[in-house]
Image (cartoon, rainbow, N blue to C red):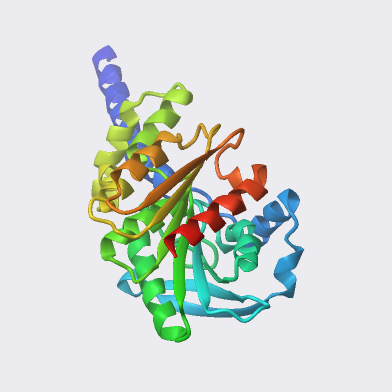
Length: 298
């Protein structure tokens, strides 16, 4: 009798462990996404977004990697310009999260293209691969932008967090762009997850477990999600920006990527800025860094 109970308990524990193991990658790759309304409300609570309402907007859909539909929006600069910037937002956010950079780029003379990353915003539900598929989506948007707007003199990319990782990873596909700005991106998602688990006092081996079951469930390996590996032969000028107080994605990620790229790069660490807060913490310095970077690479 006791032996049977022990066997049942062991079997139940084993089933629960297997279920947990296969849930782990889902936790990592399918976090709850914000709606456009929720994201805009957050942005509006942290800075003045009233400029957005007055902009001329054009919404359209671009076919991304494997014909995935991406919702895209052109924000036309009130002053005619032939310069364009594509802005990629962070994880669980959507194109409304890109608005914090739009006013700056408008002032610098750019039309702004914002979009929902795969699995975010108005796009169909999908899991995140931390730059792998997202970078191929972005390459599709770059190609579409070149075809859609025939007046382009300058085309750049700007990304925040996951958007920065997507921007950096896209460079391996040699998009026809003139520069990139990467704000608080990760060099590889593995180190971010391990740091997060350590901070939460959770076993770090769970990252390895999620990687193993993730390859079975989603066919993608966490350990292969490494934007930094796209920089070995990159010649596109990159401006790296990172908050000094970012404890989610440590500044070392940007430092390592700036050191790795084969092309011109700059890096600026913003004092007292947490994750994805640099432009909110020091808006004037942020704009100056971007403006001087653009002047140098011209």
